[in-house]
Image (spheres, rainbow, N blue to C red):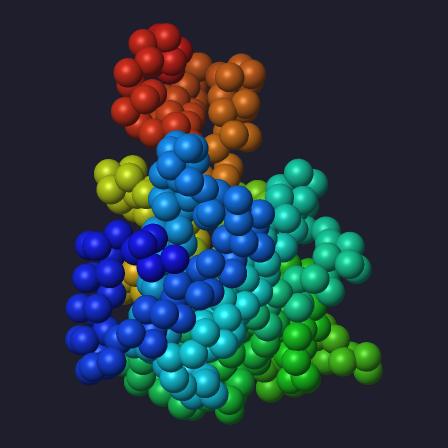
Length: 398
């Protein structure tokens, strides 16, 4: 399969391996070829891989597939070499590459399972999970939480807490934690989830928990029943609340706002408490202009719940990828609040499109409704495509 290497691709990997102070690159290139060939054969492409010039188009197709597979595997391995795992097997053997590939597939399956659950929730329009979905989500969380990008977000939250002066003594509420990412770092942290993946994470629905004022509250920060389920939290008890991949789990903007309102109630007022919101970059349009506008609109929705933005950044990467995988916001409590806007993701666009097209718009709210309909449509189809379509443009300006 050596002739499957495009010359520029081979040179690229040789250069990257040399940058990692690997002098003998041939074992790595050989392992890449072997595993790529195994995968192509397993996918039923053996006939294409052995095609002769009698089927020139098929032969060119097989070479293109082989080059694409070599590039994909090579990037995965380079990422593992740059960011080695503590327990990872060292060396340049094909078996090491197979293990990397197996972990990558496991992660992909976990994300796909989560997406199926999210899709079911959006269809239901409410936070209601079956027992099978709860178990599946718990299992997926163990995989997702072990990824380097997830660990990078945890470290970022800890660093931000240090900047506020809270540090290791911070009272942190980790909502939707599942695997208790902060339990080993902060002795006063409280983790809860609908389907805990490990002991130490309380079972509870944050949207249903009672949030009590200090008067009459028996516990220090929280109360648990005899079955080990979280029953209530004390208002203003926490220095920080973390919502990592939580808002996107909720199927409607209204539920997301309710989640933000509850987080706001749990945070201290003086000094201001911290809210950390972490979401996947895939929830924002990739187009630079549309992405900037979408992030700005999402941040405004977070601030409307009584917060002031402190920090925003993109961080963390999936194995074998260079693009940041997460957007992260650090906000502090603020007195000003507003009932709108609500937090939207691009997945809401189809529902918003139907709402815009089919509902009557009262004259008094026409301007506000016009903006949000155009904005929501822009998430799915792009602002340029909207304004290039004169009929759609006129629909909202008449």
